[in-house]
Length: 523
Ligand code: XUL
Image (tube, rainbow, N blue to C red; front, side, top):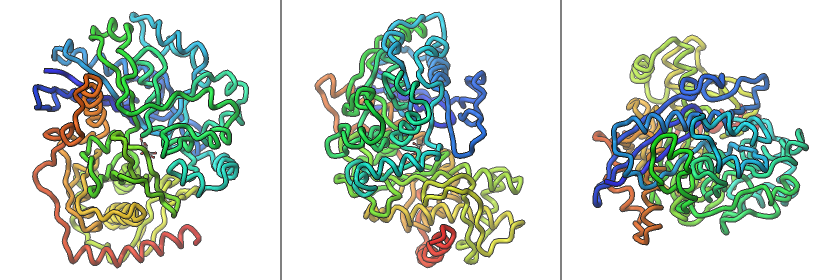
């Protein structure tokens, strides 16, 4: 049996999945997930984020990710499987976050001491001690500056797949250059979370893949290469600080001697990492057009494969590279699990109580609407968070529970219309996809069948599947993507079917929802 390892370094946790492949049969043989706050408590993060005073800023620590990877590898090393069979490793990481390294990094990555944890050995390589992550919304000025320099947001979206977004890496790099010019000048390499962790495993700088590269406002989508105009508009000499872009199935190197010695692992191939959403595309089995996935995680996302890039003219969606070499459309909502948890806590419920409240309230919530913008929202763009209630009584817990779920589903349906795909099937993934009451609202709002996937962490599974795909390609026996996902990405029993009457009601409610949303935004 050959083993393929996929990691997922998400906002709040590190996960790993080992895929065992015997002939043409593949299955998950091990999986584990560790919250950063518990695995590496010395960093003092809360839900994976370093505490700070400015609510528009969100940063984490690259050293924390390195140490968490080490903790996870020691868990894997102790899992009881014969890891001499480990053939290839890849990974998925939260998108957009950036890591700033000085010129000593190349040598430091190659010469680490296997007796010591990675974090403190890498501290001297950082030209910026923190990494801004995707929840940061502090770069509106930089977004406007970059867009203006490349001929406007439409031009930027047409070329890179997205208008300028606060969390995207380019605006974040520009803010760093403006605020800390000396530290920016001392930066030799700007990595994404994904390419940083791949570099760490390979013991040398790894490339960025087009899936994660397209979340930077810097990549020319059609060429899968940096767009010089955007690079120049972002910060001086940035072209010399960016890694190369290489296809998602590129072998970045071999697991470095450091990791081999530290955890008694073989010289497995390290495959380029990608973003969590591109990895989820594979892990949710979306290797053809027409099926959407909805990931209910810290952020909620809706996405699907696109053979041709169709750009969102309304400016909320993104087109990213897909790990297959095609494209993916995606819209991201920051008030995902976070908002569901906040409503649950506001009314002192547990998840069972949350589900009971949902089941006990009428579909459509008697026309009452909640806009659950607990934190700055990405879609639609809301800079000043706060709940907006229409017809809802502040003390009515069950109506708030239904309100948050219906608003999230209506918003996802409304803001994914730009993809111009009629989704008749939705694959639900992420933590909250275990909640069937939530999935029924999803089915009714979209008028689509909803399937819950057997492996919940599609990003992590996608990374393991990408490792297998890349290894086969490197050995000259390429697998097509249907073969890669077959038998591994499987729905659980009990597809949820839409109720036609409720779907018709939600289409009416969607109009009311869109009006409330526009009014709340002052449009
Ligand atoms: C996507 C986005 C989030 C992060 C979460 O654009 O910002 O989904 O990738 O990890």
